[in-house]
Amino acid sequence: MIKELNFRNTMQLTKVGINEATEAFIQLNSYLEQLKKIKPAAKCIRNPRLPEIISESIVYHLISDGKCPLIKIQTGDTIHHSIQASRYKSANGWTGPKRNNTDLVIKRKNGTETLVEVKATQVGYTEFKEKDVDADFIVWVEFNDTFRSGNNKQIEVLVIRPTGIAAKQWNWKPFNKTHNKSCTMIQFKNLKSILI
View 1 (cartoon, rainbow, N blue to C red):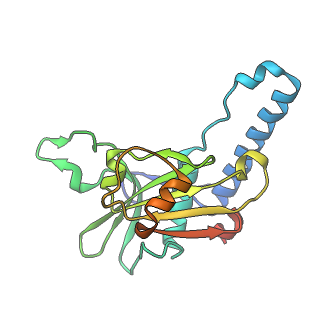
View 2 (view 1 turned 90 degrees about the horizontal axis):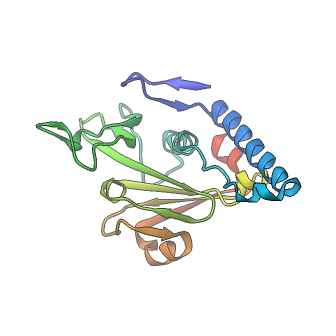
View 3 (view 1 turned 120 degrees about the horizontal axis):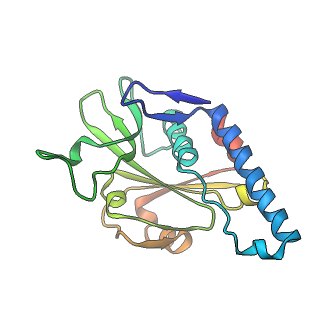
């Protein structure tokens, strides 16, 4: 199920939609794992990446439900999925490396914007790009083996203030150890505990 917003026809998944999409993604991964067991040549097929709409929708609901302690929402604030942040608009329009949409933009009732970039991993490895470290927050969700095994496993979330963090490739444990003062970690027993 997709919920429409009133801004540029952007959409994010509802909680029911997230459940349905993740069930389908788990089924896809399970099918591929079974295929690799019966057809050895299938081992060359890579497992699919988690669709961004799923991870971005999960973070949207974490923020709107008040489960991201560093990112506060107040009455009159609105969260928008995948729009261009006004700070990147030049006199010539949307140009440069930051012209792409920001994952989540919180439009504050005072007219300011809070930019949130979402990183989702299943193996604890990602790349922060220039646009990511320029945001106000990065929310890195480590799903561990939740989607690969079909088990509803623990999910870890780092809410990061990216000031002074380099745009480069990162591994979960070294990043957390090096930058733990600029992060808040939240642990969820499973995906259901995020979506209740």
